[in-house]
Image 1 (spheres, rainbow, N blue to C red):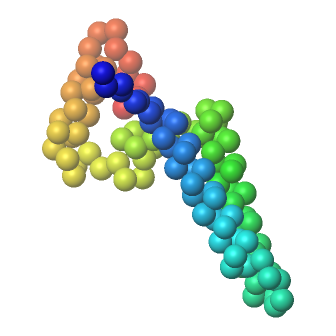
Image 2: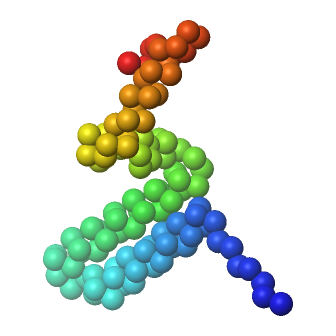
Length: 108
């Protein structure tokens, strides 16, 4: 019979990060490695810093230290409740529910 193959979102994102890191490291090796002039040294430093930032980002995400700002939250810079009428209605509904007795009024 057929077996199902499931990949979680977290593991898929880690695989994507790994492929990106390999691509950056290959670019570092094949493009900037012959350090025969100053432009290649600067390019090598740039690729090295980008690779280090990618490793640091994967480590922060894997350990849960990424700050918790994700798409669709108020910390998202693309969050615009007026662009989506459904989102604006949801925000008004949440405010109304928070105003009910026993609700939390601190978030207005």
